[in-house]
Amino acid sequence: MAIKDLPKEEYVLQGNAACPGCPATIALRTVLKALGKKTIITVPASCSAVIQSLYPKTSFSVPTMNIAFEAAAASASGIKAALHAEGKDDVTVMVWAGDGGSYDIGLQALSGALERKTNFIYICYNNQMYSNTGIQRSGATPYGAWTTTTWAGKKEKAKNLAEIVMVHDTPYVATASIAYPTDLYRKVKKAKGIEGPKYIEILCPCPPGWRFDMSKTVEIARLAVETGSWLMYEFEGGKLTFNGPSKGIIEGTKEAKPIEDWLRMQGRFRNLTDNDIKEIKNELKEGWEFYQKKS
Ligand SMILES: Cc1ncc(C[n+]2csc(CCOP(=O)(O)OP(=O)(O)O)c2C)c(N)n1
Ligand code: SF4
Image (cartoon, rainbow, N blue to C red; front, side):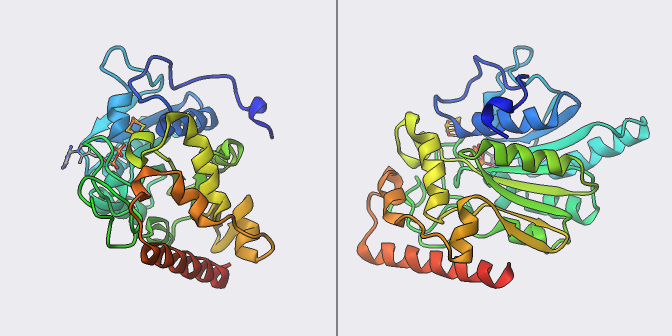
């Protein structure tokens, strides 16, 4: 499938309140093309709660519920139960949450919904920080990155939420990138057809937060995958499969581009020392080895 084959329907409308070059809107456009009109989304506090604009001039043309930061997945369980009581089992319920609302403050609600086996899709658009409130660190911020609360570079590694979701015995878990829209589209379509909870995480490079020009969003998203900094995979029926360039990198048949190429394009990594780069390379190597053993 090529990009030109994606459905023409748009569910994220023009004139929304996103920054130019916003990765969250690029991702949501593709996701909603895959899910179609019969979708209800629930959005915790985040950039997306602002991007949709003020009611009644909203820019998301599917029913959208705004919910407290910590409660997105719990609200999805409630919406799904209410739809079931009305006999409307053909409506997809999707959580659309940032990494702050997923990795950190919404984690308990996500864990609960996974354990209850709510039939929904949870999507975390991961821009690796709390963008909406001015670029603070989150549990997804990588080692060494500048944020307004880690101005000398974050000292801890990011946690791995997809792994946490997998150990909940979740039927479908996938990672994706806005630079590979047809891969993202295919994964969301597949998730829609699977019963039970599904989790998809999309890497979303954010120009103001990562400190790069707004024209470079997709380029940086692609380089994240080509350097092996972001891995694209699917976990289904206990089996892990890598997609795109990540497949060759993990199987050792493709050489990853130098991580420095990716780091250099972002102002948030401007102050890295040689030791920091060594630390980042070690972390990458450990990550690849971990997945090589798993796949
Ligand atoms: C309980 C609670 N704490 C803090 C806030 C303030 N707040 C609103 S949006 C936001 C950042 C959200 O970050 P993330 O989930 O990563 O989404 P992004 O802004 O990056 O899209 C914060 C801290 C809040 N609304 N509720
Ligand atoms: S701060 Fe980043 S994620 Fe938020 S609207 Fe702007 S570009 Fe999008």
